[in-house]
Image 1 (cartoon, one colour):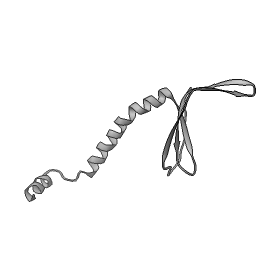
Image 2 (cartoon, helix red, strand yellow):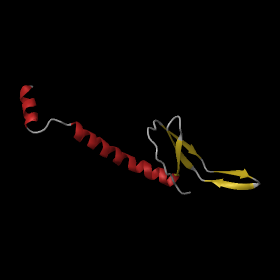
Image 3 (cartoon, rainbow, N blue to C red):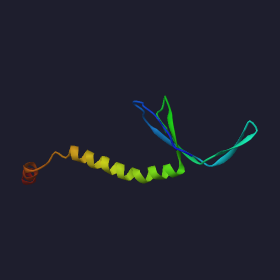
Image 4 (cartoon, helix red, strand yellow):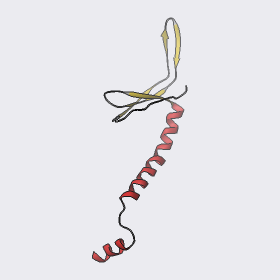
Amino acid sequence: MMTYVNLHAMRLSGVKVDYSAARVSTSGGYEVEHSAVVDVHLGRCHEVYVSLSIEDARALLAALPGVLAEHDAAEAATTDTTTGDDAVDAGKAA
């Protein structure tokens, strides 16, 4: 299975994740094999979802800690306003 999504949306909020095991269904007298997938649902009113192959879901899982660490570092850098002489003065005041 190939993972694919093309989306441009604004103000999506919320996320829900579902797992669907591999299965075989019948459609029009034919057996159809479905791969195991992870569905990521985004939004509430206008739902958008991404179906990931198990391999791509594992790659996403492996990448998320690094991405979140980058975000945390960037956020910390923008909120840290105590630098240089201010840090020394703050220490003397205590």
